[in-house]
Image 1 (spheres, rainbow, N blue to C red):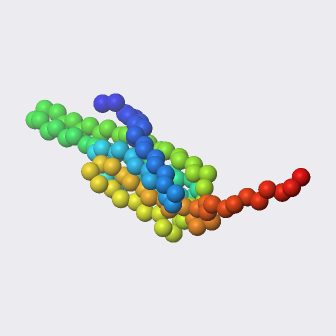
Image 2: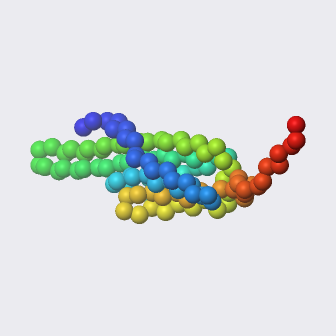
Image 3: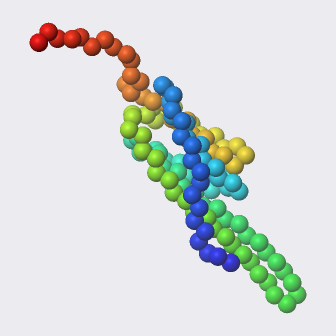
Length: 116
């Protein structure tokens, strides 16, 4: 059995005027295997996948464990509204929604041209 089978989940990041959405494909994982941390404007996704196969024969007993661990660090150069960040996990896909902080949502303004 191969020991550490580190894998990199496929990441998709989309941005609208008001929020970011990050989705990661994590096949075979459960919510409980995944950690999501937000520090300032950096999102950290990490997790570990464990699977055990047990074979019992009269003559031998074999237990196989394969581990896949991953860590992804995604910096957003924008202030995020930490209170409103949410995550959902469905069909092996983790989706994290990160609304931008009010101050970070640019409102358009006219720039005055100063006479030289």
